[in-house]
Length: 321
Image 1 (cartoon, rainbow, N blue to C red):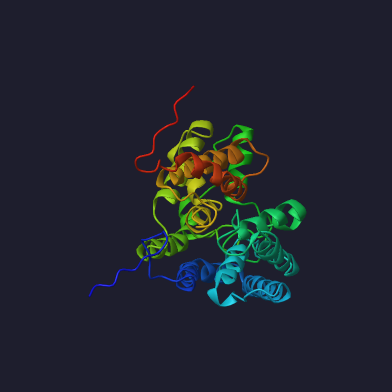
Image 2: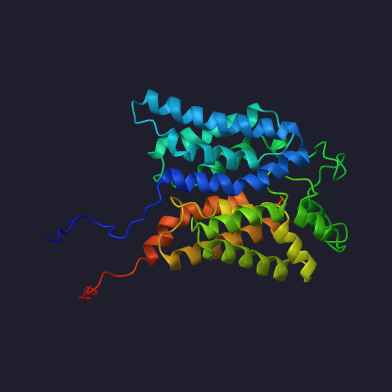
């Protein structure tokens, strides 16, 4: 006799657990984390370890204190700590990323109900909190790397923005090969495009993420900077490879809990954050913009999702009086 299982939606389920997905994300970030440590030195490793530890410990203490189930074994706190750490300047004092991890876990995640109920990416929330409150440290990219001039600490995006304002060729002092490989100043995890793309390929192969949001986000940003920045292929490629665009597109803009569920909504979301990134980079006071763009997109996600949910089968529009 066939036994039918009657249950509430959703009826299409996946065998992958939260822990397996989070471990896949951690594995995908190994290439860029390893490259960052090799590039910037042992202090970068300490930043990663301290930030991850602070994130896991914050989640554990909060859940024990609130008498909730302790869920640190799902590795979501590890992912938050790792993403936040890779968004840190390499020589930053250790207490700063630790503070950001506490904010990310307790304020942006646990106070809204925990994993799956946070309305924005916790790691990005922690980074934006630090950018606003401790800008002096968060924008200092001077390091002891042997691959570039450690006395300047200017990122390629900052160099291009200064040149663009001065009316000189924006990419005159920018080497695309160094951008691709990662011989540039920047945060620990954003500098090597090739390492990030290896991790992104792993996530796509494991079907942890889909290509729509990252590709549309990057393409939208590229089109925007071409129209409103410098009309050259080198400039567009430098904008794509420089800064945190690739890191943000594949590892942060694809966060399950803070992005629209519908495919149409995801496309709209990706276009919006792409335009915002272009606006911040070209017209803003800073040279970056990825973090703030994704955070704003996260806050708009419920509205985008509500506007793009398909109508139920057989539903009729109410007649106007």
